[in-house]
Amino acid sequence: MLLQQPAESPYDVRFNLFGFFTRISWTFWLVAVVLGYDFVQLTEQIYRQNSPGRIPLLIVWVAMMAISILIHELGHAIAFRRFGFDSSIVLYYLGGLASPTASFRGGRSRQRFEGREEVIVAAAGPVFQIGSAIIVIMVANYFNYRVVSLAMLPGPLSAFGAFVRGREFENAFVFGIVNFYVWPSIAWGILNLLPVLPLDGGRICKGLVEMQGGATSTAIWISVVTAAVVAVYAFNSQQTILAIFFASMAISNYQTIQPSNPW
Image 1 (cartoon, rainbow, N blue to C red):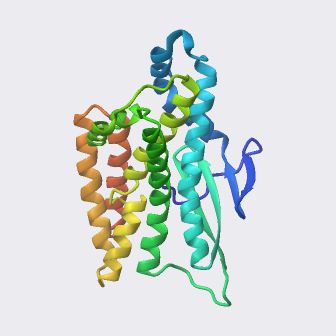
Image 2: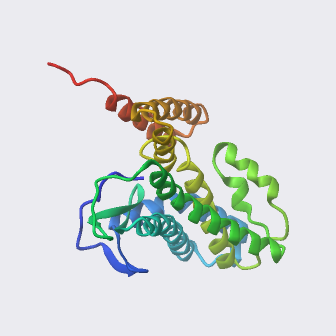
């Protein structure tokens, strides 16, 4: 979702993931705790005296969110590798970013992807993330357990609650591992598929427009309209943070296609 690498810090976590340099910024952990706090409180209410406590559950939430976004970015990185680009992965407060390096394997170099390649690279992240969540849901359903987080998805996505059936998890940790993974994986993955730049859906839209011989400005206008509609919907639904997020993207995309001010 991000356009450039966040600044490095001595407090960042660094490691190698399947050959990709990976860095998790300290800001990621802070925002993850804030996003998961209400979910953890709900889990405590469900399990009451059988709850392991708020701190252990927050640790589970943060771990599941990190794994979910890492899988998303890993999808992009593997697609980059498929087209010959080395890449690195970064997680920070707005999510994650898989960035291709300047080098291109295969004895040649270029500055940008072609339309088809852009579509595949952009789609790979959500496909990996949503696909992994579907596998977790299928395993839970196989053992007749309910994945209640499907009913807690934002906005129209809560319709997935119709698939919630089965018995409750007996163990709060297992409940957390499953539901804390499924919720961000589905919500984040589908959110990213909206045709709004710089989201993955916006990049997919841009690639499809270019494949049809259209101008990049067409994809940007689609981004402006879509982001504005989502912002209005989120505002009317009292989802203020989501409304601000999409309103800012609508304004940013609109400014991109405006002629420079001669003054």
